[in-house]
Image (tube, rainbow, N blue to C red; front, top):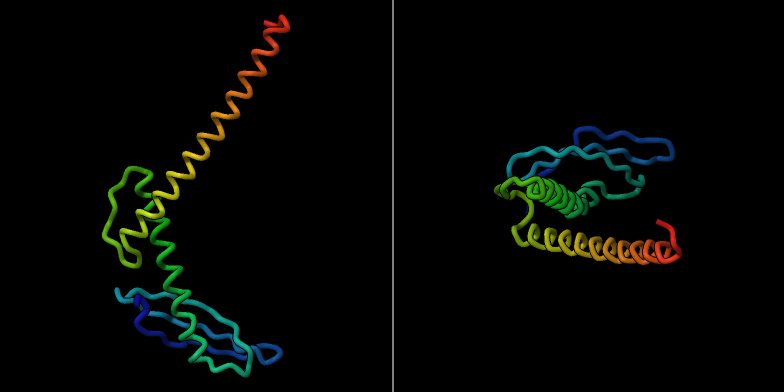
Length: 127
């Protein structure tokens, strides 16, 4: 688990009783992640914040995967990972490669269609 602790650093009541809570999460590397949540007045805030851990961890993982893969696509080496795994990176890169191959196939089909139309027009005597 990446998130180790949290603390509420601001809590206010908004119109209609909505509780606006600003939370500081600390990850396993002592990194700080600030988030703001609006909760209904009747909710148990501590429980609701704990339920947000997995969403925050997933977001950190996705941010890291995006950053690492952007670097890899720019020719950089894969760095040490903090929130994701090398399997996550591999899966992302395979998906990206497949997407690029699909795009290439689509472009090739379009190219063949255009070449056919150019041939049709050339056959009509247009140079």
